[in-house]
Image 1 (cartoon, rainbow, N blue to C red):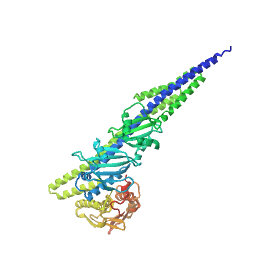
Image 2: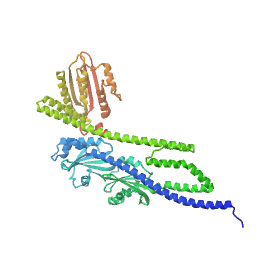
Image 3: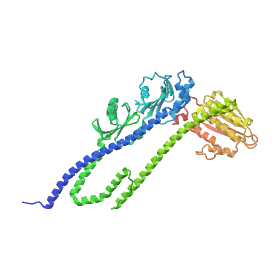
Image 4: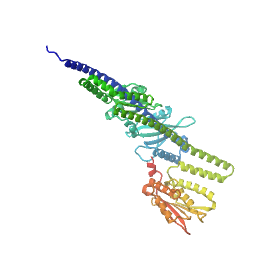
Length: 596
């Protein structure tokens, strides 16, 4: 009877044991790695989803703050509160405000204000130019009115049939006294706003969806087939599927169209939005399958090689990694320590890399904390910038009232003109009517005449047909101020200014001529050259004109120009002329369409 060599029996026995251990090990590792991977993906996705929801909540808060801007405009707010018939001027003021609000913020496709006391809406539709005024039915029984009235923050979010729109954001404007709703602000948010959040994924095929609190689908980045399935769900079905899961820590599975997904849900603190993440389970487990194959290969290697030697060698080589994992776990708990790994050059380099990584993480944490502080400081500064002008207006009005009570009419008129110019400078849009600009110039000249007495005289030649044309804010005052500042000097103690405005052949001509000391040819060349500079470094020469020239270039491109001419000597003079395209209310001006 032939006997089997001991080495063969040992080999067969060892092979059988190794095969069995490999199978058990592969199955165990697969199950463990599968659970660990799923739990890790769920935890990572939940953290990322909560971060995305925080970002979206901050965006909603910014929309909320933006939607109530009409409250801070006393004239517009009074119009919203009024119940009497609106004048054409009041409606035009609302149109102007809506235009300003829409073009001053990126990411909006439409903007409407519903004046509930007057049953009209003023706004700009998506894809259509111009601000339109429409008559509307009573909105108190509508869904958007009820949703805003029932929300603690007075706003609500609704889906849209427009593929370009992410969602409708509707915010109520209330009367302070009785908390009643007097107006609604309705904005359509660009779908591309979700582009950044949608691009930040845990696995390549993650599906991010956004619902409102009623369970209506607002947005999903799913492909067409899955999109149709998600869109076909009723709000009640979505609420039953998603809302109870918001606080779950373990994996939750949903099978959709034959594909199993890991579901995560996050809600905002005001219960306005619901964000869900669907992770395709096959994609999540793709790495786990690789681990299973790797485990089988390890078994084969164990079978071929020396089990003991391989075990000792692996333990010896993996000791630095084990130590590093332990350090990482302690670092995750806040215990900072430096890695000192030896035994091999690679281990030492790994330890140094770990130390550099922890130092970099600490630096990033500090920088992030500093960035948050800077952001808060910037918000405080912005708030102060809003509060200070109102304080100054009120102070000037209080001083003017006191002067009037003491029969100081001149002082009262000066303060009234100064307050009007200050309000105009801060609150007026970049493009105003010539009529408003001339009022501002008249107030400025009046203040200068009081200061200079008989040393200043101004003659005006105004074409009445041009008063309703649009001009850049503070463009004429810049010319008059330059004449006063630079025209008096040497033996010239007084100055006469001639202001001429006329409209002709589709253009507006604004000319300011003074009999001041004039400008030398070299200085005139420098001023003309400064028009085309990107930066201004000379604090005394032509900064006002250069800035005005740059503003005209931005507003009108090549349609506007500044002409300047001057002479010195006995018949000295300086003439500055603005040539602007004739624009009126409702016509396109570059600043109004691009200032977003």
